[in-house]
Length: 330
Figure 1 (cartoon, rainbow, N blue to C red):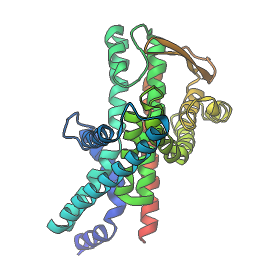
Figure 2 (cartoon, rainbow, N blue to C red; figure 1 turned 60 degrees about the vertical axis):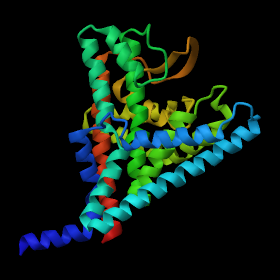
Figure 3 (cartoon, rainbow, N blue to C red; figure 1 turned 90 degrees about the vertical axis):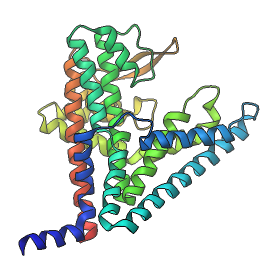
Figure 4 (cartoon, rainbow, N blue to C red; figure 1 turned 180 degrees about the vertical axis):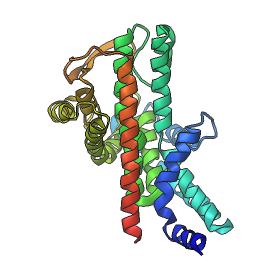
């Protein structure tokens, strides 16, 4: 009878368990690198509409309008495809439908891939293999990496892990709370559009502007949630939580992104490091305002500590998602 009662509870509240199961699935499987990965398929949908709507001969106004139309069509397409898959799952069995919901949220998050990239770069630095560390770093950042030393490799890795905690973890869970698995996958679609179209170059400055601004809007609240959770994670890990708050409040707005600084600044404070500075993109040097104080010299250990903060933050967000969805289903 006890087992039956547990089954009935799970049947009623199985939606509550989706964040936990999605996170566990990510821990076990990670983010498989395959052309059949759903995010890769989303990427092909984006490329299709870009090919149809982008014309180099269009004026800036047309590029802006067609870019906005592309955003709408891509989101509608993904919504239809995911709705159809969920419907088919429901036709087969309610547990198949449920499994699809778990997989959809799992697809939208990426803590293990972030951690894996960071640990790999840290180990290569430890082995003195700076050449391969630069190469692996180039897979996850847009800046030129050919001439970076250990300190700059570390800075780039820490910045990437911190900033991607927002769009790779916190935001998908946030939109899961608001719109269920569909909310999470539509967010991931919007974020993928930004990563593919949101460049400030000649081709995408206008065509990709709607995608970039839409992503900024979607990440506004999740970025600030990330700030708070990074501070709490610093406290649990016995890093400097007080400094995380101080630097976060002082420096977050210095980031060129309206959201990136709210992830990077508290990490800089917690770890007593300075982020920002000179970066080179396509052989062109740029400067980004500093965040944090250079109390400690950047080294590979700061990559590991950032990963620990990212995972504690992830667990906290899984708990929050679970508690809120439970409250909504009671």
